[in-house]
Length: 307
Image 1: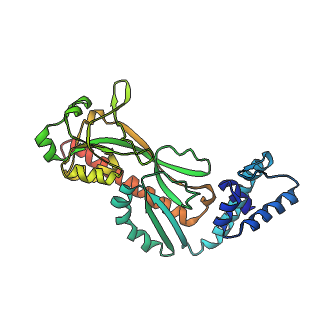
Image 2: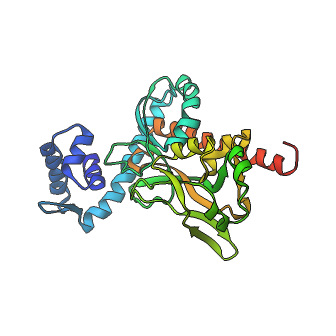
Image 3: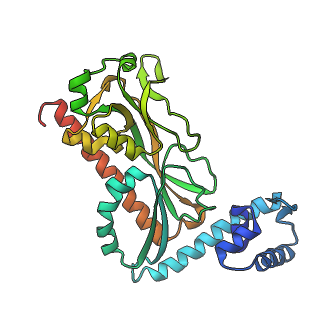
């Protein structure tokens, strides 16, 4: 049954066999034996594709529930030690990994010494099942039905520059003023094109093209060049929060700031009962929410003239 579920999720006997550490022939034999016992065809097979039959789709949902209950039974026994163990492959955006995750990891590793982490910093959206990722942080919609997404909150786009740059070039008062400023752009990882800047106006969100004298395909490089005074740039509030809070950056066009992408912790449905995945997902969620909460509190104090 576990082999059947993995083949259904991966859409391939070969990829499922690799995940399970068995041969393709073994995976095929196990599913064939299951079909024989049930007396139904679970997959429609062609030379290029493996797709669930109608019976297979119904059996998949029931199988997932049964396997989840088995995992819960195993977990109930192992919880007597309450020591999550195993290797986790983690995928997070570069800025989150460098600014928030790395400083917090020693405390996590101390609390859960049985967990081994492989962490990848990545600004592109990866296929968690294809690349064997156990848990990830995503910004934006999650449309893959094979994944569980735990929504954390909504980010905000902020437009920023270093105080030294603004002292020499002035503050833009509205988005149209950016035409006379040096701007730093971000090249989208999926298309390589300049991402349009986003603003909020009376009629709702609008996108605006700006004249970029610099452009990078890495959000950290955009931030670093902005801190160096190269120009005005737009990024996630989470990414710029530390520099805004210390005064190294100054927000401009605050009245036009637009809500950004939804932040979510994402992991494969097959891993929902993993204790290690659960504790690491909880850890990342608290890390992000606590940081966002501190930034909001500091911003509120500044508006009131306290900080």
